[in-house]
Length: 439
Ligand code: GUN
Ligand code: ZN
Image 1 (cartoon, rainbow, N blue to C red):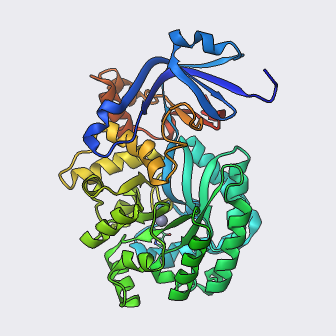
Image 2: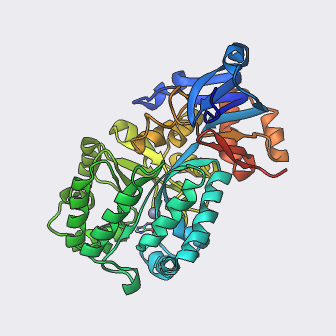
């Protein structure tokens, strides 16, 4: 075998969701669990998954099998909405969305005009994702193009699949944080040319939200999407009641909040709308018809007092949904913590979120929300080898709880309730171990 071929083999307890589903009750029958399994990847792609017993003939060219006895290996977590420049401002006290933006967020984001600062935070951010088992994210940068370069450069060092974009914002924010319709368009276009499809990087056209863009800017964003149909659109939608009222007053000619984006050609199969807590019926319908996706961000929705997202409706209305941490309105980088809060948000609405459904949203469902289900989300042969090694017994309390579990699902649910970065033993990106928990 030529020396340029890189083969990795990992042994442990493998768990994933084998195929896409259209209803939550189909997930359990699509769970794949291999008690003593082996995953082999070559040049970043999965080439074989099966039992240790069956693996022997496939291991001929493998020099070392990395064994994680008793650890659970799942597909890398997918974060469908996060702001890297807000890493340093998690836990900013006392405000709801609009005053939180003015009080904390805009001053923080102003710092990213300094490329050295952007680089420092971008590197920290990528490490924090890996430490939490997140291998792909859809990321807001700031208005500064340099902030996008800094993030993609940090991700490229480990060939991480990230989707990101420069914020478009030309009103209702500090002058130094605003671009113009024309320059926002030009800068985004240059970034698309530079980054979209470079290695594993993908670009998202990123208007912050309707109130901070003029109609001219949204029009230019739509033009860009037409010119580059396979780039993403990433923005916020229907998060907070005051925000929604503001949008309606700014765009009285549109039927509602989502209709503003729809009008400018910003809905579609690669469009991701963070929050969607208060969607109206016609908006659910539009999300479905345009195959747009929602990023459900429970820690953020609770922290900013935005409201309770009705996850069950995504199944009823057949709208794609992934999980978002929404750092820094969200309070944790951990998808485990995010699932913990997601469960409680459903409880408060009289609904249940099962452990297997949680796993689905954090992995394959998130991949589908990002239109990447052909590349990510489970261990099917041909997919990209991004996965996370989980220790279910990271604390004394967890050990006690896990020693009492009645089933795989019970143990998984306890992990999703109590887990955080302490449970992440190792994170693999593109077939390589890029994070290992210090002993
Ligand atoms: N809406 C517009 N900007 C933001 C932001 O930075 N965070 C959140 N959570 N919502 C927003
Ligand atoms: Zn956000």
